[in-house]
Every structure is written in C-alpha cells, then in structure tokens.
Length: 192
Image 1: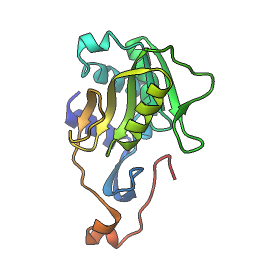
Image 2: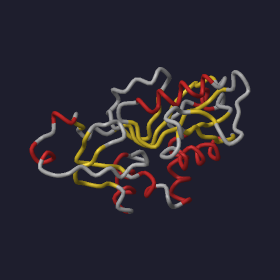
Image 3: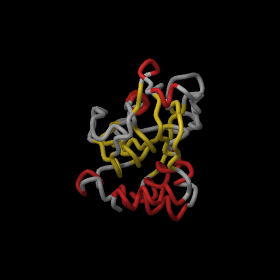
Image 4: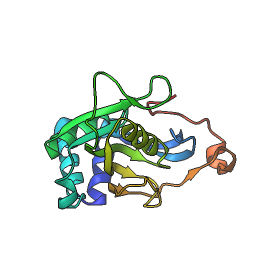
C-alpha cells in the first residue's frame, strides 16, 4: 500500500481528524489519526496487517514467535499482525500506570517478539511496552506501527517498521501556534 492509499483509507472512514488534539504523549497537534476507526473493519484491518508484514524483512519476519501490543490502541493491529504472521498475539496493559502482562499471558524466556503499535509519536509508550515485555522474559527483536508520526526520527532501541511515516507537526503546551492556542484541546485517544 502506498502512503496515498493508506491516507485514503483513513479519510474514507473519517479517521483523519482535524482540530486541536492533545496526544497521549502530552503534545498537541492539529491532526489526529483515529486508528480504531481505520481498523474497525476486519477485512481492512487484515489488509493493513498484510501490508505491514511486507515492511519487515523476510529473515526477521520468520524469527518472530509472538506479537505483543500495548492496550488499548495496539490491540487490533497487534491481533491482526499475529494472524498475518501465524503467531500468538498478546497485549500489555497498565491498570496501575505501568505496563505488564495480565490475563494469564506469559512469555517463555527468550521468545522473539514483535511489539506492535497503532501510532507512534514520541515513542514513549512503545519503549515502556518494550521494557515490560523484556521484564517478562521476552526478546523484542522488532517493533511496528501503522503510523510513525515522527517521520522516522523516533528511536525505539530495536528495528522499527511503520506502514507509513508522517510529519504532522506536534507542539509542547507552551509552544502552541495561535490557531491552536485559541481553541480547547480534545483528547480522543484511550488514555485520559
């Protein structure tokens, strides 16, 4: 899938939002990508996952033994990546503020993991998820995302394979341009 085809998929389901948004990273943006809407159709989610698997080099792809994603945003794409790769898909969650495996999920020591996200902006949540996976015994050999909002500047400590890279500007709360400062920020993501 090309970048234009992917953005067209976002637009077709009103998943590319414009306004004033507070991102999970704490930064502000005039654009928000609602991956949950993009992935709500199982057929589309499957196509997105298949396109993502093609971004991962074949030799690395063949080593992946499980996919783990952070809840909530990464759940759907993580599950679909597990299906596309023919491996189990699990998730980490943070009911107490720190990511961890729950619900009976466990990893055999050394299991080679793909950590899968929906959108990466600063990489903070991704790095926290990777740390939790490694603390549980997993060996994170790669990370993936539907969208890399950093346009390739994020560093996760493992090879990173996004479907698309975008450079929608983001701003610290004290750096807002006048058009954003004049409106209240909306937080459409899963974390409050």
